[in-house]
Amino acid sequence: VFSNLTPPRVHRVIEDCRQEFNARRPTVGNVGETYANTLNYTNHEINSGLQRAVSVSPSEVIAELTVSGLRGRGGAGFPTGIKWNLASKAKGDCKYIICNADEGEPGTFKDRIILGKYADMVFEGMTIAAYSIGAREGVVYLRWEYTHLKPHLEAVLEARRKSNLLGADILCQKGFCFDIRIHMGAGAYVCGEETALIESLEGRRGEPRNRPPYPAERGLHGQPTVVNNVETLATLSCIISRGAKWFSSMGTERSKGFKLFSVSGDCSRPGVYELPWGITVDQLLETVGGQGAKAVQIGGYTGQLVPARQFDRRLAYEDLGIGGSIIVYSAERDMLEVAENYLEFFVEESCGQCTTCRVGNQKLLEGIRLLQQGKCSNRYLNDLISLSETVKLASKCGLGQASPNVVIALNAHFKEEIMARPILGAA
Ligand code: NAI
Ligand code: SF4
Image 1 (cartoon, helix red, strand yellow):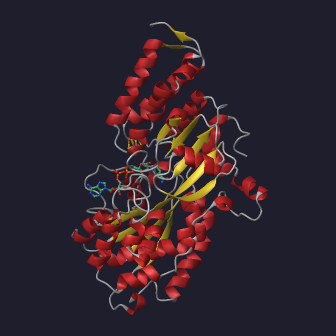
Image 2 (tube, helix red, strand yellow):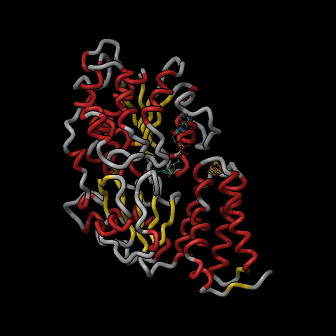
Image 3 (cartoon, helix red, strand yellow):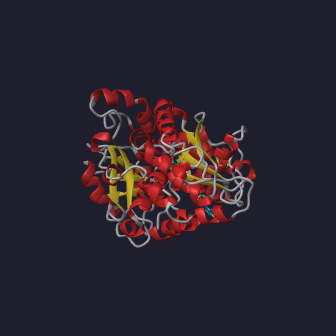
């Protein structure tokens, strides 16, 4: 499905073609499941992490998580134990756990697979978090495009309530009361940014706030709030069940454990893979049938475009730290069309608060189109690079801070493609 399409529409392809993909793989049910190898999730004994958590003190649970080295799986990789510790110490009338299920990064679909197959582990992780920081209410902020998952998630929640895994006196622990509700997003990519998500939950436009204060200190309704990604919550259930030592024995020095990667684009085996941190891009491409690629986008559109000559780089926070999405580009791809696609996406999804992001991305898109038409001067190309740096520096949230990456990467790694079109002399 992916390789037969013209380049610019990869981010839409993943949603648009889901049904077609499923029809082609009737036993699969979801994009990627054929190749999913989520061994650690499959082997997890549901609720064993929660049972172990309530048998020790909240601070011991946080200490275990800190020692494990788990870093947030949403993309930024902030240490989960530190976040929980801050929230547990912050003063508030009530505290909240939010599961960020607004998985909007183009090329990312691992959380969809987790929610479809391992929802219990996500809710288990939220309940462990609630026990650890003293929260009474949890919210799953579910991407509007994942509405089809809601009935399933509601059914799992109801079963957990019936089994005394949610509600009052959970697992007969007097005073440990916690419940989870699902809140539907409305299709805005920027609501995956945690403070925009919180604004949206509070009934306002989904626009990022200034940080600090971070949600761990002041989040939903001004109260201490832990916002964790779906994968982070599922993974920590395994960690609390099997111990920090087990988890930290996998991966690399600064990237402990295993990770789920959503792989799409020009490869013969797209899907969700559970892999240890530290493998090289080359090894990954071999696994997914993407040999001969010209470039790989690591970490979705907000990540890094890595050219073939750098395929010996490692997927790990020491080198290429990523949220979990890999898009493969074959030798036939036109990188200017790829860049146009990225910028069209960011122009559409910018919330518009920052002039640099609102106007800057439009200008970058115009510049890419001038390059495509052979109507760009050398001087203007230099101006585009300088504008990219300004947009990165002066934008408030991750969207604007990362959207110009593709222009910078194009100039750094694919200059020959730019120069293959006519470039006008100095303006
Ligand atoms: P960030 O580094 O600012 O924050 C990451 C997390 O750590 C947040 O929860 C934040 O509250 C917490 N944190 C950071 N510093 C803290 C401090 N001093 N005290 C307390 N808590 C602190 O990154 P951000 O802007 O939240 O996320 C950017 C990432 O999101 C990018 O890596 C991007 O790739 C990824 N992303 C993922 C998407 C997806 O669909 N999974 C969509 C779009 C972006
Ligand atoms: Fe909104 Fe863009 Fe500014 Fe983020 S960087 S707050 S998306 S305008």
